Amino acid sequence: MKPFIRLFLGALMCTDWLSTAYAKDVVEAEFRACPTGTAIGDVPSCGKIWKLKSGKGSVDADGTLKISLKGLVLDDPSVGEFNGTPDGVGHVVGAVLCSGMVAAQTEWVVLAKNGDVKVKAKLKLPASCIAPTLVVREVWEGKVGGWLAAAGY
Image (cartoon, rainbow, N blue to C red; front, side):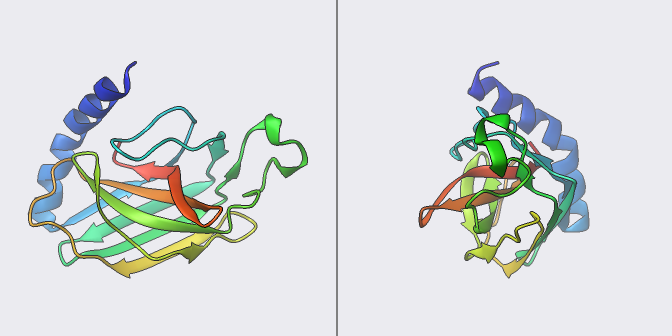
């Protein structure tokens, strides 16, 4: 499936979720790991396959972003002995996408060697956010890169 079609279908699936989110003034969702090769809007895919034991996140109307992930590690035999670890990804950022574009993101947060991370930050969000998506992006070689886990896509 082409990336645009995936994004469009993802936006359609979020319509019910979005209306509920505005009614409650909060977006809450479970996270999934990046399967590789799947961009979300303008955020590129992870470079390798990742897995996630569990993950949840929320963003409140006031911009408070909370993300809690457990066991975000590589699930890719091509990395050899580093499979089952974050392999050099020592930091991540949490981001909120609106209509597939990064609306706001956090400062770098430490990703533990077992793949656990907690993100809590107050972000300045736009007044309107269509198809909100929460993502955790890798920091690789000093730069924010592709997404490793996401909710709402």
